[in-house]
Picture (cartoon, rainbow, N blue to C red):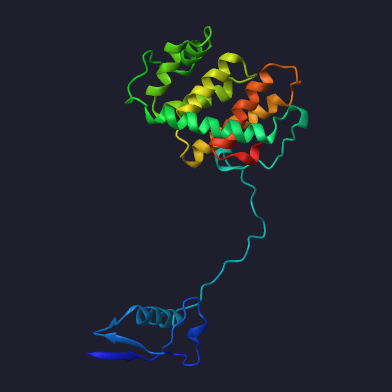
Length: 232
């Protein structure tokens, strides 16, 4: 049985909607719209009979709520003196080279397994990472780590970082090589915090400081390989 649904307001111009409709009556077959256009018109006509959406007034005394750092954004712009910055050409070139190297290493990444020297807490990891110059054996455990463990170690280094020594830069570089560039908001926030801390340290340096190059390297990797170029 075919029937037509008579709209309440015949003067309603459906041709001016975001999705225009050429007819004014919805054709129903046993109460079901005959096609997509009839369905859209039927829904609009039903909605026109419902009470209009009521918007609540703005609160007179809004509360100031402090969000956790991972849910907030830093609007403080840290300006770095130009003489401490690498050239844009170097940043672009190094960013491309790192992404190519990262893809190469991740494409031949072995199956995940427990690190050869498993650590159970932050203090043990600190001893493991900061005792002597990182060896190939120590660094090789990174390629077997899960993404969660890599992110945890990066969060540790963010806390430990007071400068960018050779061993710190080697560890952070290696962790970033094996970190998947596709990540959730919390992981991206962690990288941004690590970059901001590196920038703050960089702004205390001079051109003659050896650690300046290491800082610029890590900051550039996060900016170019992980899509955080606004921090440069």
